[in-house]
Image: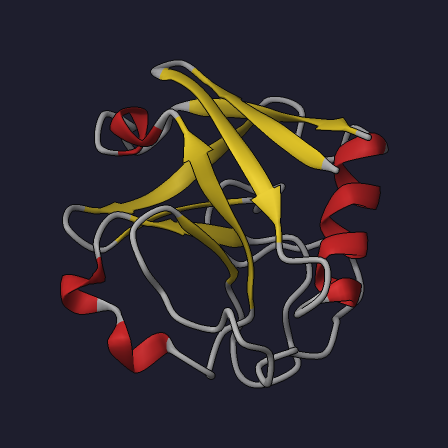
Length: 142
């Protein structure tokens, strides 16, 4: 299973870390299939760090109405370029917000603190072109 994150700057093909973060992947896939991400924005863009989206309010404080536990013990819990990771307001408070890593340069402190649940394997160049306020949608391909 993989997903395509459709952005204004290009498509990002994502492969999921289903073995390392099965509940986080299942949550993201369910939200995507339910249309939750349709037309949301990347509300936070920090160059050479991350692009973040998934807040239904567009402000960074919203979510799906529930929280999920972190899954940080797997082998793929390193915030390298292109990695998808769950944003949260503290351990076990993730929901719908996620971020995509620009580069490893400034992200090692996130390792085993935020759940890595996938990686962009095609379209990496588009990550650096995304601007705050750009919209996106997520298509899951079984």
